[in-house]
Image (cartoon, rainbow, N blue to C red; front, side, top):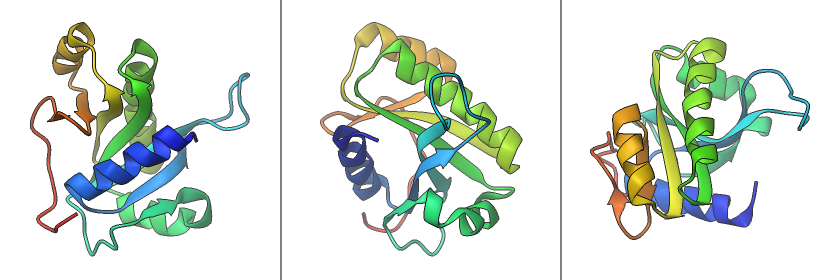
Length: 147
């Protein structure tokens, strides 16, 4: 995970509240990497939140119990909004639903720089886009707890 991904996850967590689990493995490995993972997963609405970024690797069992049957966000982060990160969020959403038995997963992309054409595509695809400067492109479930 890059420094920009970590930074975006921290900023997002402060904005919407709740706990975010980082680098959540989904599916089996691919030819390109040892693991497939999402940059982050957030439960909606947050319950008894510590307001931290938590490493999935060290808390797998707690994570699995927390998200089973819940609605979550499948979060991917990148410097700019691009087709690659949008695709990762969409596929990650489906893989979370299959592998972890979540009720539903909403794809969310965090980025520093948007792209008007791709933002329009995200609205049609149901992908929420968040930037530190402009916040959400569309409405999102948030916590009543302060970030």
